[in-house]
Image 1: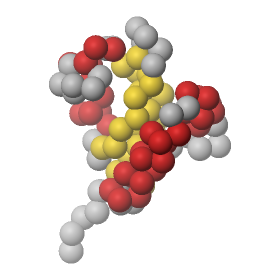
Image 2: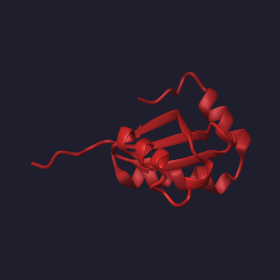
Image 3: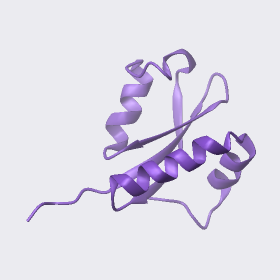
Length: 91
């Protein structure tokens, strides 16, 4: 029997610039540390980052599907509404 880890779509906001970043991981704490240490090419220039929201998924496929949908929207307004939605806090 294999253990199925949850996957998360996480929303970060640059404290310095105010911009958002959306990613997928199975370890939130590790991933935020990596972003803030500059270990991610796509976020290194906008450090430090603050976690704004997480959404939990039972499979990596579901998490990546959600991430792709969010990134295709290219809308700060949609991201801000999702983050502010108290009915969908995440874990």
